[in-house]
Length: 225
Image (cartoon, rainbow, N blue to C red; front, side):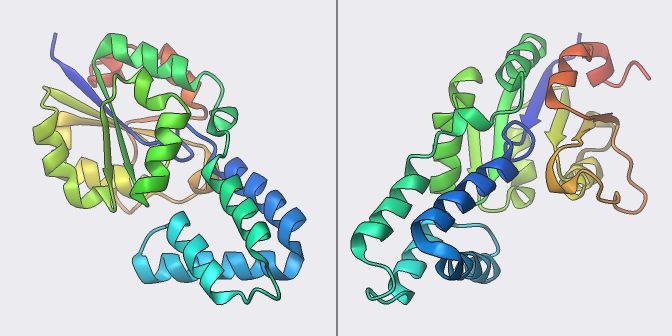
């Protein structure tokens, strides 16, 4: 049977990033109050606009530099920073996320392909045991769509299955790989109701990452419709 490789996203695919963000919001509100919390999120958005991605360490650094000590003392800042750096990511894994990775690992090679701030993404992936569950096969990029050919060459297989919560990324992969790929849309997180790019429909759509434990290898290969 043809060989399979799974390219698997993290945020809102394996890990509920919306819950993570809400928990961090709660810490900020308690530690800083409403005014400085809003200022933190304004800084977060400004960094995202400047860099084209979410960068938590850079956001914290800029926030620290911009807020005068009279409004936020060093102890408070270090407390907030620690809350981000020591966040318990395993509690926000979707139900059966790791079990699903193990199941996919019985069908082919599982590879985590994630993008964003490289330091913070690495923390998420290792602290939540995702990296260990896929045998350490983790690829991190600032923008993964710019590296699709590179990913394909690093983990060659007869067929690629891309599992993601973002329709635009799935559409880009289908455009690049065509019939050699199966796109799997996991309808979780903020993109769950987003319209698909024109002319694109995912090959497989599931409401929960755990649902993939019921998908056969032949269906991932496109043999079952």
